[in-house]
Length: 247
Image (cartoon, rainbow, N blue to C red; front, side):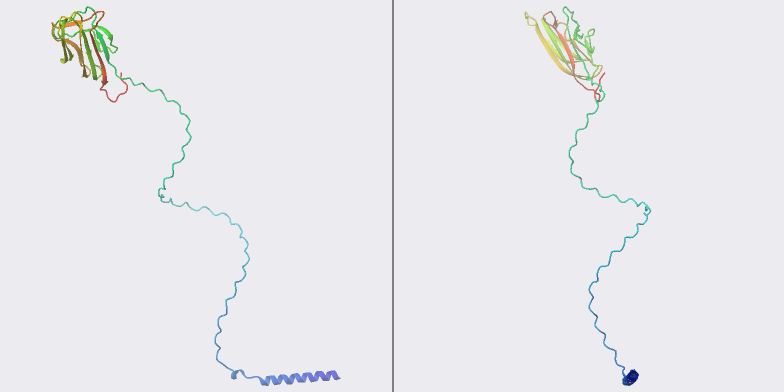
């Protein structure tokens, strides 16, 4: 009985207080004010913690090759590099074939009078030195006493005459011209004397050179077992050009 009364009393008290609170509220229409001033921006927040690494993506299939690009312009020439070290010697090569041997042109002769040879007594006759010492090319003819040029060039000719109990005068002839003349007068000497001379001549093929009597009465060429009269000639140098081998 007492408990019910107490509960009833509490309910009545709650209702009474609720009514007072409702009576004390101010209507919203009587409380309208101006908008407030915007507040200042807040301070920046601190950096957040780094996020976790994402997972690796799946491998994609290889792509197709793209089209070939155009050729680029040539680049500038680079700076010359330093000279490298000398390389090791290479192996010795095989020997080449033997070449042809160059043969220099040749022409030489030396002849003399044989003992008891009869000399020409007519002016203009060639002295025929009939005994050959050397005449490998056959350029001197013992029958005519004349040398005939085959190789063009400069030649040297020399005549040595032994003179005994007679005067002597002869010419060194080239074709129809006397190139040099020699003379010795007999002075009643008891022993043989000598008369010698020589000359350089330029010849072309076909030219002839010989020793010719100048005076019929001055024909004192002499030859014996102890002394000789000789005629010699040889090529000094050839005029042939641009050829290393001669027939």
